[in-house]
Image 1 (cartoon, rainbow, N blue to C red):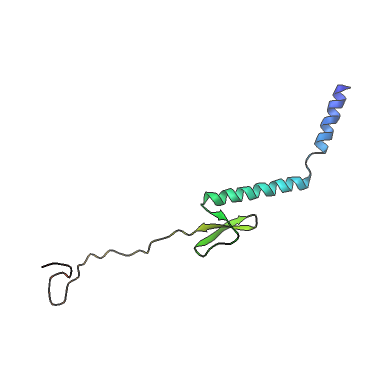
Image 2 (cartoon, rainbow, N blue to C red; image 1 turned 30 degrees about the horizontal axis):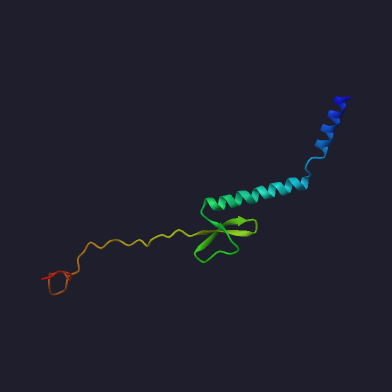
Length: 96
């Protein structure tokens, strides 16, 4: 009789487990948490709107993940020539 009671308890708990809607909600919550974590890993923030110096990486729930654009310094080649006047061979910054 105890075994029958244990068996019926097992069958009842398995059949009344989480419904499909609870599973979907759990999956959706997990997905949102993963996206927020991914946003923080790329040094972003979940905000209502991004500034002009930020770009949208992905969406945390229904808010964008804003990441600051990486600043790339303009490439300028260093000048190796010295400034001379047209009538003299002395540099401009030389003291006499």
